[in-house]
Length: 199
Image (tube, rainbow, N blue to C red):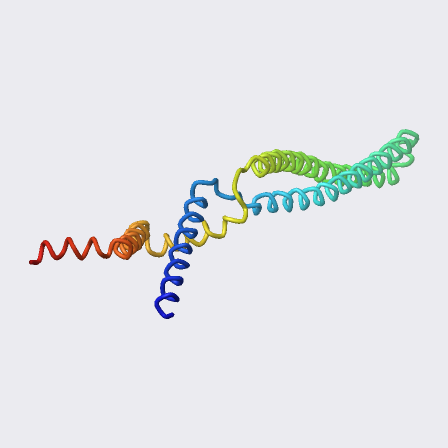
């Protein structure tokens, strides 16, 4: 009974080794699974850029409104100045000129801010377009990938093992395993050969 159990256990072990070898072989002849991390990262970048783009467009709109408001106030003051007499209303004229100078400075500052917003909007639009192209490329690669998902853990584990022991260690392990299996199957033949050599 013990011998029967031992024989059955040997068969099960041999089959397990055979299937493990087949799975390892399949894992390495099929393409490696493509990571979805770059796709998720690109989607995150697009979402952040779109949010910033909306804020920048709103800020640009507010800046343009402010520029228009300053421009209108300058025009109104210019209309008032054109109706004043330089000799009689010199004090008021000086005050309005000072007001125009201040408004002109504010206008230049706001125009500079508006230009910055426009530059940032252009950069964000280019960045979003680049990321969208990258996403399309990644999605195409994912769709056309011929990897077998259920066998990828075998590949990952074997890669980790090969990193730890090196490819020479794996080959030596397989060679030792095959030698043991051959010895087990051809035990009588080996006994005969070694008897011939050591008579």
